[in-house]
Image (cartoon, rainbow, N blue to C red; front, side):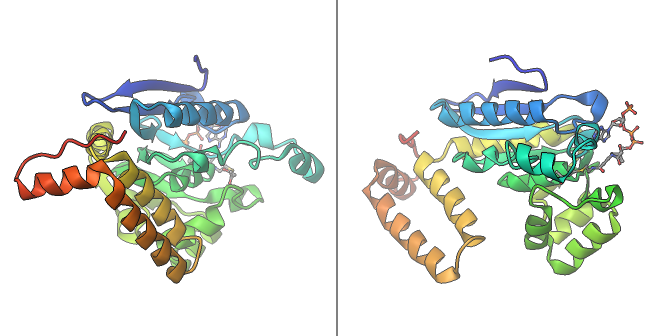
Length: 262
Ligand code: CAA
């Protein structure tokens, strides 16, 4: 499959690889247009369906992860055309269908839809150069890809209100202390760190990985009691797998486990 707005490749030395997707509209700071979002959706689903892939890393350039939805292509819309063509709704949430972990490796600007896309990934590793923000208010609009909902869940109401209402940018250190970002690394180590995290995950049992992802998402969608109940059922279910026997036997015999479920 060849793409124009993204680059895709397989990385890693283990039996299971990492699917690396690089947003690639450098002149527009990776502004997210329709074609890019279509291609991103296709690439994500292809890696998700590939048994040889354990994890996906999504990254941009050193200057920008993505500076938001593409402003010139949004500008001509009126209400009816935005509504009828499904602006944003149409192709922005394919990423939520992916069952494998998606790690966002964010350097430079992650603004508007760029910040929203990073928040739709499972966790964010940020370069110390990263800047996050939801500046849509400066354009006379509001976020359209979940920013008003996911940002307060990540950083709390007060900081989310501050960022959304003043349009100020937050640097990587502030984003880490606020809980938006899992870890901050030097900019020149960003991809290596994200790929190393992916490689670690690739070595674990695929059912454990997929169920942890599903359950953490459940934590943001339903009541605690439902989440804990579902977790307990899945916990019991994993005792029916060879990987549970392998993992526990390896621990007790002080050896490295070799997980079979891919
Ligand atoms: N869409 C299209 N093009 C964009 C863009 C965007 N979101 N952001 C930047 N670009 C383009 C610029 O137009 C410029 O192109 P030209 O060289 O052809 O003029 C190029 O990228 C470089 O940008 P700047 O010259 O502005 O670079 P800078 O370093 O001075 O500033 C910036 C960088 C602060 C990111 C600034 O470009 C900026 O503010 N961009 C817009 C950010 C924004 O408002 N994002 C939200 C978009 S709306 C949205 O995302 C809705 C949603 O919820 C889904």
